[in-house]
Structure formats: C-alpha cells, structure tokens
Length: 286
Image 1 (cartoon, rainbow, N blue to C red):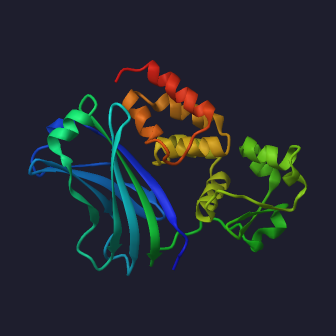
Image 2: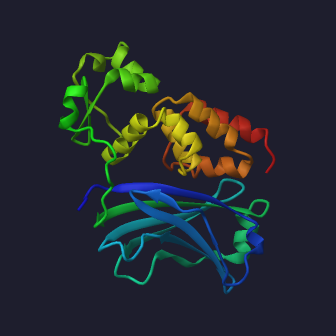
Image 3: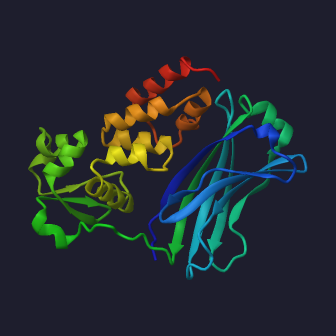
C-alpha cells in the first residue's frame, strides 16, 4: 500500500461540442498515470452539460482500489474558469462504476455561451490520489544499492536513494550538468537531496533517460502525456528541444489556454516559457 499523495492533470479540448447529441458521450484519449489508464468523458443530458473522470483499469485485474479527490474545471475564452470539486471518488475492482463526476456540471446553454471557444471546449481535471492499493508500478530498471558499483553519486528523493552516474545525467540535461560540474555546492557532494520531485516520477524519469537515446526523443515521439506536463519537464530539467517542440505543437489560442491553465494552478512556468506562450498566442487565431 502506498500512502504518499500522488496527483496528475488531465487536459483536453473537446472539438465540435455543439454536435454532441442528447445522452451522447464525447471522450478524451486514454492517458496512463501511476500505472492506471484515465480519461475524461462529457455528456449532454436534460439541458445540462455533465463531466466525468473515468478510470479504465480492468475489473478482472486482481483486487485494487483508488481513493481520489477530483477537481473539474472549464476554462473560458476570457480566462475565467468554472471549477467544482468532488471528494471521496473511489474506484475499485468490485464496483460496477468506472467514473465519478458531475451529472449537472453546468447548464448546456451557459456552457456554449460562456465557455465554448469556436465550438471547442477546454476541460481540465486535477486528480489527487489519496490512497491506492493493489496496483504497483513495475520498475523497468533499478537504481538502488545493487547498482552502487556503477554509480558515483546518490540522489535522494523523498528519502529514496537513487544510485546514478554523473556524466550520463549531465550529458542528457543541462540541469544535472550544472549541478554536478558547475560552481554549486552540490558538485562536491556524494549524496544530493532533490526537493519538489516525487520519487515514483523520478524513477520513471531515470528509466526514460537510460532506456531511450534521450528523454527528449521519447517525450516528443512516443509519450502521450499532455503538452502542459511536457513543458513542465522541459523547464525542470532544461530540455530546450522538448520546449521548442511543445511550443510548435500549439495550433490555437485555445490550445495555449489549456496549457496555461487557471491562475495559480500547477505547474507554474518560468518567464521564458510564459513569454513564449503569450508571444505565440498573439500570433494565432482563436
């Protein structure tokens, strides 16, 4: 059982929202977080627009349970948002239900007039996993003490020790290059504590670095993670090629608003990314 709080963001732009018929559903693509597939679903019913978060974990995959708090948000053309929070959203292998959300999130007419942008609707969902049981994230590669002989530094994330090689990480990321070979105090340490990073996320990050020619190649070509999360990774580890790819992939102002999210929401981008996003926004149509 894992007691550490885990969280992630789902963002999707629903196209041609006015064509959604009564009791018909539109879905976002399925995205994997913490070894669990998730997606957003919306329904038009009884004059209301309904929103749900689906957990697509197979019911016959042993006994498992996930307890979450879900925040669902619409982002308007002016940047104003409509947000609702649902607590105790429990998904498990014994339940016949695979979704939680709001049957009457907002009146359909209000959604179309105040939140749809050229028949496109930005939906953002923040999921906090308070408890998860019966589901383990398989490790493709180990960075524990068994690899000590192949390492020259220990990175500590949430009290978990990762045994890694300085030169390899420095070659992949200028963030680590500065840390290990710059003028920082950390360059002289054999153990370095990293703050603001989740241990499981860092395990996944290291696996990508070691198993792919570069992390950037994977994130650009194969990863199904959102552009918002990819930009956050590019900022954290100073991956310029990934940042450039994300900016170039934004095709409309609605796309950029989805990446920026609501004011005060995570992640908070640095000035270089924010300036690039706004510069592109001014050059694009709605």
